Image (cartoon, rainbow, N blue to C red; front, side):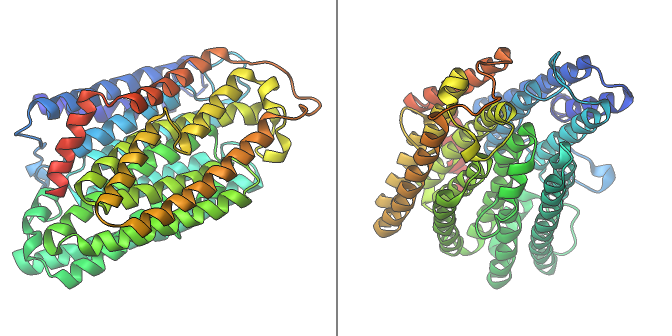
Length: 496
């Protein structure tokens, strides 16, 4: 019963928050703050799962029995799930703390705020469900639900561009998730042909155990569908085309969630399926596909970053870049997997942080065009400092955590005798570095446009942002023992 209670503490708060917002017809600030407080319960439950995973090393999984529904062990938490739970719940809490409708001067009507908090909490619940689902069908349904809830949030500020971005997001991601469904069905029918009908045929644990008996050719085809499907959700090039529009038109909190938590869960799904396919046919097939897509993503990100004229779109191309790096890490054996998971953790924190910083800039300048932002260093000194630090972190400079994880990733690549691949990747990263520094230079200096006020507002919102950048520095200077133990446990489980 204790484990049932633990899962309830994890999954119930966002659902209760959505219900509370729905029941209170006239939005009040206390509703938004209640949502934030409830998110802390999910964060505490996630930390509890991490502790259990670290302490009970020989029993890394737990299941919730729902035999009456014909399902067994529908929920499951191991080291990888625990890492993703920390990412999702941390970013969810940060997002709700910095959401609209909490301050006295926020100028939003009741209806969009109610819709925002209902959709945001349902998005968080779907992400948590996808992370703890042992059943691949349940995970697929949860990720499909994230598409719907995100699409409601994109046109928070109702404009023609935001509505078009929402429709583009729905269409592309729906096609992607449909392809992931095809891959799941192919694997299921192969399982049934070998092992017969079973209530738990789609559980990760069962698939891993049965994988050596599955037909290699069907698994290869299934993985292509799954990689394209969930890769669309993650924004792997060339399935990334929804990202610039969605990131550019989304409200800041949704951009933070999509670029960090949602991205992380999509990559989690790919890694889970990679483990199944590798168990059946070895890792060379999946590694080759991931290396190709990883380098291609870096190339697309590099040349798009040079041409972009909007700083939110710049962050979208940065996400494509880091997607490529993580794909490379997944394909570089145990050392690469360790580096990729550490990079995923660092990127989750850094990208969400950057969206909240650029949200402050967009509110002040009234535009996300790089050419419209001048004199940022004088106009918003604290925000410009955070923006500079965050951009330097994203391009992988010390002393930030992304430098450490990228260094570990490239060391793994060179040690596995992929020198030319690593040289090409480093060259593409150098192009991104120059492009981002150039954009940063244009925004920091020059004359502040007429009508733009000088000075900071909403100073209390700077506190969590300073905590974020401080955390990235800590992860760049040292790797805390609990994180190292958790990552090593994941690598042992997935790469063994």
